[in-house]
Image (tube, helix red, strand yellow):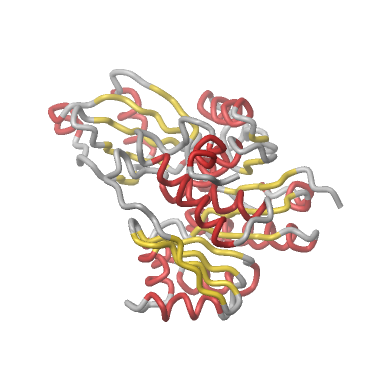
Length: 330
């Protein structure tokens, strides 16, 4: 069966709203400099109204990954939840303009507005992020169209959406539909605190439904409650066919069957580390989808991550195909 999409992603559809803010402004608004904090709706609206200038961009972890994959010529779709409001239409239209289908229409009756992250960039380049989860966090199995899942060669799920029970049921429904039709399902662990909150549920999902999982060292250590990475990856590899661990400047570790593959990285000082994991996933999944060996998949992930940390913002500023060509990857 020919699939309509090479890669379908499910994640929180967050609009990044970026503005400038010096230290005096941050202090006046009660914003803690240089960190990401979750905010409630009233606070989100206050900060949005206070932004002296606004630049909007579609964001979210898996949305960023699909944007990277899209620069490599594969067919992609993003499945997320946005409200029928100005930011919701902006997000859906921006994804389509970038070449990624957005099959779920904005929801007119959603009680929450579209998710957004108000990002204040200081003169020294620090980014202070204030994220309101909004409509995107209400994703449920009602938002999963089985036909879209069945038409995915690869499905990639964002761990952040596991914070609510309806997100958990949606993931299982999506993965089951994809795999039943011959596709492969994968997960990004997203964040060590996310893993802490859902450790047992994540373990069960990985064992029952996942063909591959991508996480960083702290996420894997948290998942298996150990400080020994080899132990954590060994446990994961016993229940999941393909396990990938990124390590911030240290070689990437890939476990598959009885193989353990190490992919070297060149350590550099990032301009902005935002999106490094998202773009690693983009390069790695592109490698899987095009039939590369696992070491080459890892090298593609490393090259994609290296490109995005060289500039401000979580999405590639040039096609990853150009980045790959520079390092001898095709």
